[in-house]
Amino acid sequence: MTELVCVVRAVNPASVPIPVLLDIGPTSMWWRHGAGLLGWGEAAVTTTRGPSRFADARDWWEDMAGRARVFGDTVPGRHVPVAFASFTFDARSRAESVITVPEILIINRPEGTWLVWQRPMEHTDELSVRKAASVTTEEMMDRAREFWDPVGTAVHFKRKEIADFPWPRTSVPVHELQAIPSAAMGEHDYVESVAEALSALQRGPVRKIVMARDEVVYLSEGIDVPRTLTRLTRDYEHCWTYLVHGLVGATPELLIARKEGHAEARVLAGTADRNVVDAERQFPSTDADEAYVAEQLVNHPKQRQEHRYAIDSLVERLQPYTRSLHAQDTPFVLRLPNVWHLATDVSAELNDDDGAPVSVVTLAEAVHPTAAVGGTPRDQAVDEIHRLENEKHGMDRGRYAGPVGWVDARGDGEFGIALRGGQLESPHTIRLYAGCGIVAGSDPEAELAETKAKMRPMLSALAELPESE
Ligand SMILES: C=C(O[C@@H]1C=C(C(=O)O)C=C[C@H]1O)C(=O)O
Image (cartoon, rainbow, N blue to C red; front, side, top):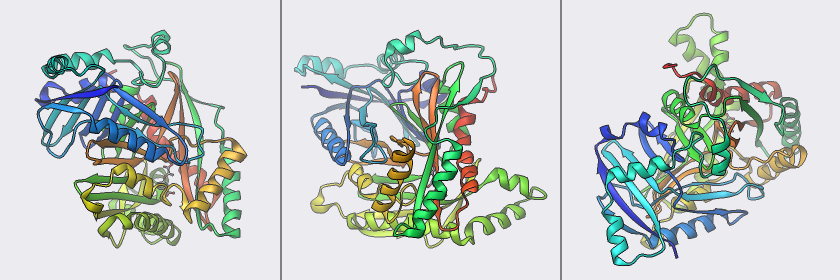
């Protein structure tokens, strides 16, 4: 039986600068404000499906982490081993949910940087374990480099497929970025689906439903995941940049985080497109922005209603796990380079029955999907989404809009909602997704425009030419 032998070494952050690390092409990532986790390779993995996808992944992980042996330094507030995970939006999805243990892990926090080798071993006799435990940081970095691959997805594509692909690593000319007609839900279909969702809202009982569409993007030179990640972390530093089994993006929305008995979430719903702001305002000024924000978001009844549904859905599902819970009274405006959102931060003290910590995976399962990506009431809205997106147009959300993040050996971790990203489908194609909350009074064309604004970060991260070139 495979056991994880983990070796933790504190390193000088200057010896592992992030641009260099990203250039090695991590296979997994969770990153925000210059801190987070980077992983290379795959020491162990399991995939799960259906309604028990969360519980099966959690049980597998608890067994694996429970048997792990850990040597070396301790990381304050983190409990090695650590796994990345990503779950499908719907239990009916044809896609798999995944929990993956990177072999080499970098933990970067304001307090320091640690290198971890999470080594899968079949023979854990004392001699082999002692030998493994004596590994140096140089050997760990060499091991990370062995997992280097230009698309950053060694665990997603077969290595041969990558080896055969003619990757230009230097002097890339202008990237060619094209949408190719492979979307399951084209723009016209989307407008129609939103109109159908509006009829469903009139019939009831659904009051809010989030409709999404996909778009397949082709890059003639291939998709350079390390550079895409670099641009996302640079331009969207307030978002959580993620990469798990080829699902990549930068999400502004934290579904749930757990740290030592404390939970946090950031709920978003209600959106204004910044391009529209720039086009409509007469002159660029902070006052004009504030007036627009007040009119389009803070004082806009439809946006406030959409936002309320999303908070209520989270609070209702999280409450049973908490001793106390606090949600801000009034939403604040989260200003991203592409869009502005109404946002509310929620924090809670967990009750952790009988002293046994409730895993962040269990919490993610409980609160997913919030009305930010599903609707209200939850189950009927998800059924409507299945009917309109999947049955009518054959669009499977896969892991888009599902929880994506990491979990440690104690069940602490962070899960975002996999938004503003896409699924790599080949070394040169990626399927992007975006959706919008539909409530009575929504305008299908305006919602289509909003999905375009939400896809913009990924498009520019995929295509932008690095300044150095
Ligand atoms: C569904 C998405 O975003 C969600 C929907 C929002 C809205 O409708 O206003 C805002 C933020 C997200 O909760 C997406 O980005 O694909």
